[in-house]
Amino acid sequence: MAEKETEGALTRNATMKKLLLALLWVTGVALNANAADPPNILWLTSEDHGPEMGCYGDELAVTPNVDALASKGMLFDLAWSCAPVCAPARTCIITGMYPPSIGGQHMRSMVSLPDEFQFYPWYLKKAGYYTTNNSKQDYNVKKAEQGWDASSNKAHYRDRADDQPFFAIFNVTISHESKIRARPHEKVLDPAKVRVPAYHPDNAESRQDWAQYYDIVSRADKLAGERLAELDQAGLTDDTIVFYYGDHGSGMSRSKRWPYNSGLSVPMVVYFPEKWKHLAPREYTMGGKSDRLVNFVDLAPTVLSLAGIEPPEHMQGHAFAGQYQQEKPKYMFGFRDRMDERYDFIRTVTDGRYQYIRNFNPHFIYGQYVAYNFVTPSTAAWKRDYLAGKLNEAQSAYWKLKPTEELYDLQADPDQINSLVDSEGHQAILKELQGALYDWCAQIRDVGFLPEGEIHSRSVGMSPYEMGHNKKLYPYDRIFEAAHNATFRDVDRLDLMVKYLGDEDSAVRYWGAVGLLNRGEAACAEKAEVLQQCLVDKSPYVQIVGAYTLAKYGKGDAVRMATDHLLSLTSWTEDRPVFVSLAALNAVDKLDGKVVHALEKIKALPRKGGASPDRRYNGYVNQVLGKVIRDLEK
Image (cartoon, rainbow, N blue to C red):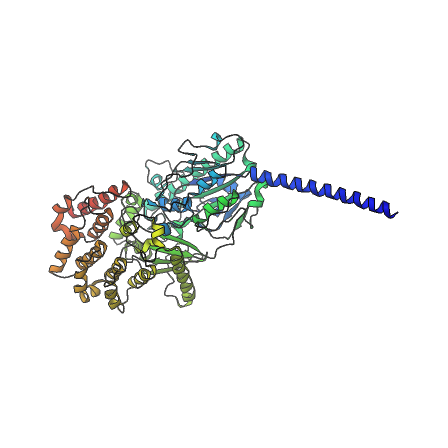
């Protein structure tokens, strides 16, 4: 009996062993299938439009295709592009890094990366993906091997090898800023029906451009629908994870180029077919919404995570889906730096409810003249109505100097016209967000606290990222302290500005000069001799700020002397970096009639000079120079 029981036990054990081996084999096959058959990933992107779509609750928007995608997928309530303009936003995506950490925040800055840092498609291609980009690149960073199998207006996933997984981008430009101003235009949405934001004047041009914007977003939606239908006809819908997003806010002024929520907020819709729902965000539900804060810096680590690739440590975003998805971040960050020919420096953070904005160039007005932007009828009409005295306080603010800090409640004040910086009831959130922003700048070693030219000059023989992490080459703490103190307007820190002007680091001296400029006429009068010393500083950027301050706020002969010195720095020669010429020309442009005596000299300035990071710098110099001449000839 015992012998039979033992025999039965052995039989049962053998059976169990076979079942276990079979289970392991099936599991192994499944695991191997997942490894050998990763998901296809399709990104549908469109330019210059925010979440003005039906799926985001906009009743004026006609966007049935993306709305349908959202109804079977999920959208993120608040997604930010990180930068409110194309090239730095695209740089953020391709690198998975914040552009201020790599020196790529200025338009067409064309900086290098450390050799070991690769663009995200390189990792996908290495893992066996067929990678296509249709079609823009336009990054602010250089890389010889970008990782694309095909990148052109003909690139398509259908050209891959049999059974090869694909990652494909289809980007459309039909909603680009340039299409807002295209005339003639066949109107679809009645301009009388649009809601004009509180910061825009309610004039015919604003209504026409906003209505036309909605029309071109509908066209972008139609093209997205065609790509989704194409995917379905190829029998790939059930095997493909789909993303739809815009590249930053609308092409309207104070959206595009501006790091308000209207400039940073984009639609972000994701769809995971049943086969790949285990890779979806943890909160994913059909037709649902996520309150997770999603930033463009998150896209590269997320797509790698979806492909089963662990994101490299240098990537600074948070994967929100896939095998390596991370917890929700508490904050989301954005920035603005040089926009084409105009310098600026803004950093911003949100917790989803409140947005804090830190202006490090409060001595410049919001609405600096950017030639490409002023071609848009509503922009020119906005300035026209301001000069005619037709605008209220909220509409006029764009044409005035910026405050040092701004704080907005995005729920109560979506147009962001009522800053809460001085509200007693909001001091705690103000300090919290300021602290979060400052911690972020320190963590990423934000190189934006250097004049643009010094990002390049200090990085000779290495990348700006490497320079930024070298404490001798970039003493961040000292430079940041100077920038922080320089950009408030109190008079108590004037002597501190003078102290900064004696520092051995040129960037600290630069911020000392900015601190005097920012405090205006009284500071110039009290520290005129110190400002005159700026004119012989070793740094041309210190010279430019000092000369501009004296020319703008000085008295008597000092004005002419400072003006002439500033003009001497505008000439773009073989030996002078383009950054010096561009910064000096920007200052000259803001002096208006004070340089009229030098009109002929200005006309004779060279239109080309020595080497620059990109040929488009020629256009930036010429745009400022042309405006200066036109204004002086009036």
